Image (cartoon, rainbow, N blue to C red; front, side):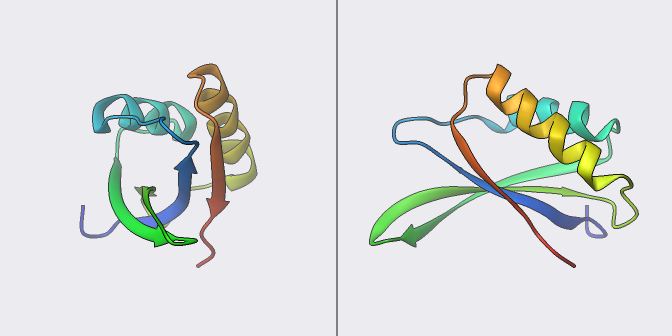
Length: 89
């Protein structure tokens, strides 16, 4: 959606990947809403092409610390070794 803002970005360890549908399900569960979008882009980090995942939702998303804790737990449950970063607005 056009009005969504980016809340989190993350990368995965070598060899790990996640498709848009399972990622969207994780993000929806963490946020408690279906009004979310996900994106994957490739960037060069430390000279290596790396997938960077972006999690977006309404700019009015509330209780970010709780959502972040849920998101971290859900990524661990999915056995995804991630480096998660909050995107400040």
